[in-house]
Length: 242
Image (cartoon, rainbow, N blue to C red; front, top):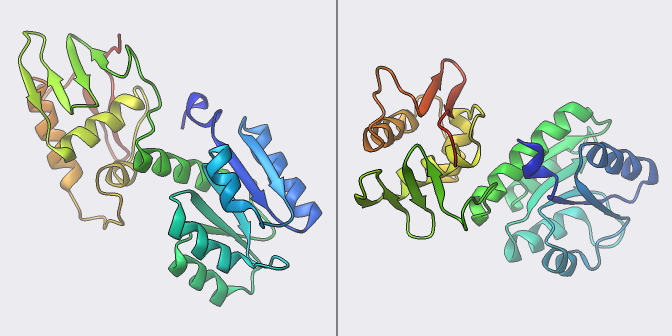
C-alpha cells in the first residue's frame, strides 16, 4: 500500500496495558498513520463515527465492556476494520471474536512487521468496501492513454468517444488497478476488491475479468501495454495516468 493511501488512515488502539498500548501506537506512528489510543472503549462507537476511524486494534481482555462485546457492537453498526489483540492462550476467545465480526487478530508479544502487513491489507480492503479511492484525478474521473473512466457512472469512454457502462466485476477490477497504478496487486487483493469474500486458490475469475477488461481497452493479451501480468504475483496497471 502506498504512503499516500495509509498516511491519512486513522487507527485507534484500545488497550489497557500501558506498555502494549505504547508499542502499538509507536509501530503505526512510525509508518505515518494517524493514531489515537485509549485504555477503555466506553465511547468507541461514537469516536469511530466522529473521527472517521478506519481501523481498531482492540484488546480482548478489557476492563468493563470486553473486546468481544465491543466487536459485536461495532460490527452491527460499522464496517470499520477490527484486529483483535489476544494472549497466546485465548484460542476460544479468538475464534468467537472472528465469528462476531472481527477481521483478524494478533497475539502478544507482537511481531511488528507482521502486524503492519496485516493492518495494511485490512485497510486496503476497508477502503474498497467503503468506496474510498486512493487517487481521484480530474474530479474523480480517471484518464489514461486516451481513455476515461467515470467511477460514478461506471462508464468507460474510448479515445474515439465510444461509451460503455462496465459490469460491476470489470469496473471494480479496473478501479483497483487504477487506484494502485504501478503496483502489483495479488489475486487475493483483487478478489477482495471484486467480491469482498473469501476465495480459494483455484478461483480463476480474476484472470477471466482481466481478459475481458483488456479486450475492452484494446490491450492485446499476447503483448499487453496497460494491464501487465506479474507471473506468480498478480497484475499491475502500467499505463500513464493523466
